[in-house]
Amino acid sequence: MREKISAKRRIINAILNSLVFSAALIIFVLVILMAGYILFRGLPHITGEFLTTKPNMIRETVGILPNILNTIYIIIITIMIVLPLGVGGAVYLQEYASNKKAVKVIELATETLAGIPSIIYGLVGMLIFVQFFTLGTSLIAGALTLVIMTLPTVIRTTQESLKTVPQSYREGAFALGAGKWYTIRTVVLPSAVDGIITGCILAIGRITGESAALLFTAGMANELLSPLDAVQSDNAGSTLTVSLYMYAKERGDFETAFAVAAVLLFISVIINVSVKIAKNKFKRGEEK
Image (tube, rainbow, N blue to C red; front, side, top):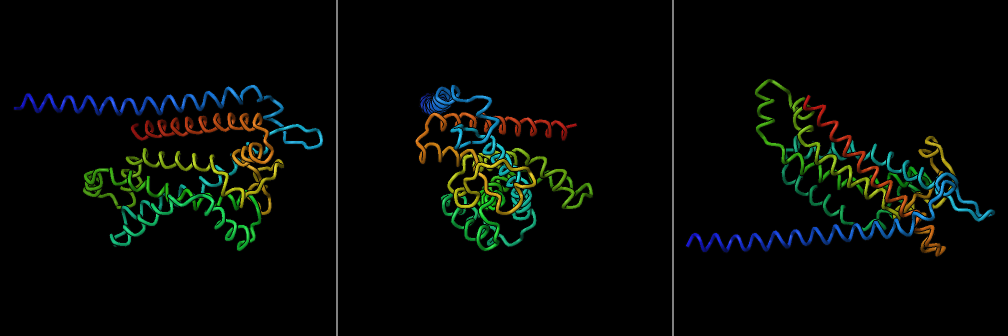
């Protein structure tokens, strides 16, 4: 009887493993095909002038340097605000909050907010930051809108990562005389760094790929802005995704659109690789 059960389980395991492998292979092939098609259509149109100039309607030239800089500004401003808020909120909910019912309500709210369409965030950001706080159509208004949009993701991923830290780690630190905040800072957070980095990567991915919300808040200007100009009100700026939408849908210039998509793909890869390298260095530093 045991041999029959074992054989049946082996067959089921083999079937499940083959299904999982097939699904992973299909996803891998689709990603490779999509990235390959974008690079095939976009790389021939990427030149030095394309990357280092701004658009000129008189000379009918195309440049995306303002869009690249605006994308970087948006990412930096949003991450600098959302990471402390998200990680701090997750630490409070998991380590300090005593009212479990309130915590469950907040968790439900964050999960609900994470699934709201971005166009709604754009409308809310336009009403609150652009009009009510009189920031105007600007990069800072767009960044604050993206903070609200990505905050639930950072909170939930960090909180779930904190839950995976064994309680024995905390009890061991308390037994050695460590305080609660010292234990969280030196034991809990380093153990949960993988989840925090994952939340950061997910947030950056959503920031980089967002266009609907930024159309209402950051605008579509293609002027070169300095870092100081980027944090001032009424300085509108078009990111790469917004410019991609404009070239593809408004102008019908698909060659330029694919070139912008290829640049956006490279930037996404560079950011993800950089974040993972920083995570590995941080973990090695903690081990030492």
